[in-house]
Image 1 (cartoon, protein in one colour):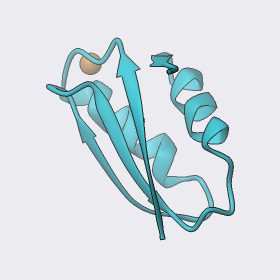
Image 2: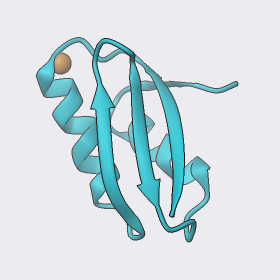
Image 3: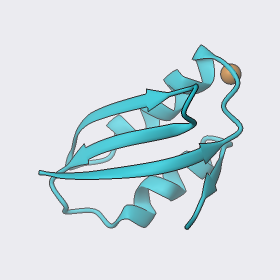
Image 4: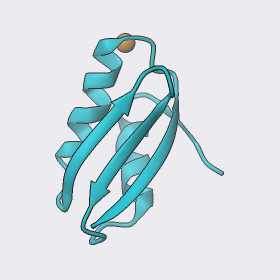
Length: 69
Ligand SMILES: [Cu+2]
C-alpha cells in the first residue's frame, strides 16, 4: 500500500473537502482518502496501480488547484 500526499489550493469549506474526497475515492486502486481543509491536502492510500498524476488531474477536474513540488 502506498501513500501519496497532494497539496491543494482553493478548498474553502466542507463541501470542497467532500468533492475532493469523492473524486479521489472513485479512482480504481484507491483504498482510503483523508482530506484536510486546514492543511490544504489530501492523503491518498492506494495500491500503486495509478500514477500520482491521475490524482492531481482528478482534483483539478473537480475545480481545485494542485500545488506541484
Ligand atoms: Cu467549498
